[in-house]
Structures are given as C-alpha cells and as structure tokens.
Length: 113
Image 1 (tube, rainbow, N blue to C red):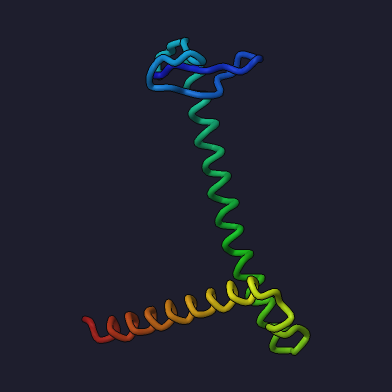
Image 2: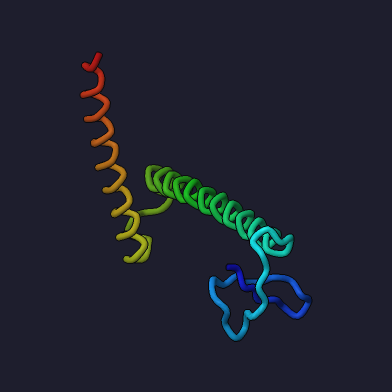
C-alpha cells in the first residue's frame, strides 16, 4: 500500500490497498504525493467536523428561536407542518429526558466525597 489513482492533472485522488485497474501505480507511503493526499483528506475531515459542530449549534439556536416565537404567540406549534411538529416535539422530549438524567447524576455526585 498504497496504489494511487490520479486525476487528469496528475494529482492523487484515491489510495488503494491493492492494485486495481484504475490504480496501478505504487508509491511508498512516505512519497510526497501520498502524504499530500492524506493531509488534504485529514484537513477536509477537520473542516467537515467543524461544519457539523456548527450545524449542531445552529439547530439549538433555531429551537430556541421557535420557543421564543411560540411564547410570544407569534407562531403556533400548529402553524408548522406535521413533520416539523413531530421532529420538534421529539427533540424537546429528548432534551427533557437528558436534562432529567443530568440532574439525577448531579444530585448523586453531590454526596460523594
């Protein structure tokens, strides 16, 4: 390993453990093209993970925004499509259960020395 597949510009676009028709060229793992491909892939995974974390934070913002709008009666839960209502209620139920579990664990750990 690795056998490499290159694009039309000669850049490595895939690594294979074994030789396959589209990847017949073997390069040692320390080869600059292999290392460049691996670090670019790791960088993309880091960027993807950061984007995912951002999505999770924004979901919480949207939930809180909906709560504020519903508290002010600007929007009613029944104004939302059925699928959205079910998802929102499911998340609220989950958050409530997790909060309860967290409170129980917190109370139990208070008496531990």
